[in-house]
Length: 170
Image (cartoon, rainbow, N blue to C red; front, side, top):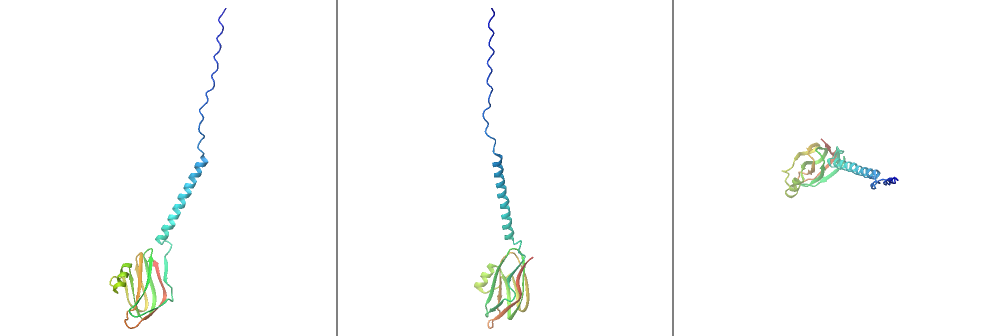
């Protein structure tokens, strides 16, 4: 008799792959990227607006005192007008002064010195006496004082602006 036939080997069970983690949720990732881009664009716009404001990009002509303004300045006194220029400008006005007036452009340091000593020797610019006429002075960016001084020790003066005191960017 012949030997019994060998049994066929049992089939191996199919290999199952280890479970893979689910793929990264692309929609979630895209949402984060979109929010990041929105934030960056908003930050750039805000910084551009702040920079334009600080540099005075949109302001080219500013009225410091309107046409028709009238001051009465007692003898040996002055009227101070302070303002800040965001960029270099020409400051001008036309006026009539009943007993004359002198105009001085002063930095804050020179103005402080003028207040304590009465001396205008550190003035950036001086008009000389004006009874009727106009003046124009080129000033750099920064804080400024224009002082309208009654030069008389005995008689005050009335100053009337016949055109606005303006600063025009140069």
